[in-house]
View (cartoon, each protein chain N blue to C red):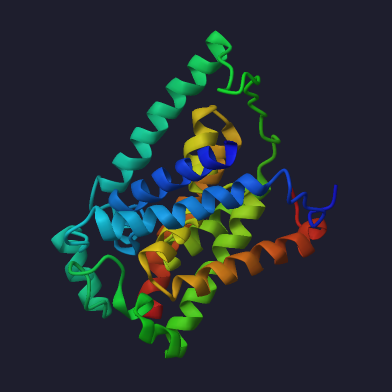
Length: 136
Length: 137
């Protein structure tokens, strides 16, 4: 069966769960939270401020990438686009993402999932430790 | 009825992703800096419950709530696609600070730029579909 021969009817539940995830985010942020600032490690906050992320420690997401103003900032748009492209392509190629491999796959004791999770960490560590200093 | 159940599961997932802060770019960065137990605690506890549930379902042949057999399909035993695909995914995970599930949660929270990430992730999936035949497994 070809990749693009997609049976929307039998896969409809995927979209329903995604819709639920959107509603859940809305409920969590608007009805179940007072302050959504993320209290990360103070050392991490210092690191991020050195890199130029001024909102570290006081917001849920970095304002440089996720405030509305990011939509008119070329650098932010390129970084968001690259991030999305890599996640989408990588998740398909690896046959799963964090939940598909790190949680469901490992729960079923699948060696391929362990290989994928090791890949996730090689990629993530490379990005944060080697590429971020070049980008920010 | 099934639709409602899937919707409820999605909502619970969304609330959990938001409230656990697994949908926070900052938590992902902190995880890759090894400066907190937070993300390891979330993934680790989910994994422990997952291992126990899968083992129980297999051991006692537990059926789904619709009375259907629950199937666990083993993954193809190759190496290349998992390590290469995994590395590509990891690079994006750290950069965008979100994996596919939390991306939708962040739409609900109201972060408009995450729509750019989602659109490009869909494009990435599309590119995979085009290149599939040329990639090693």
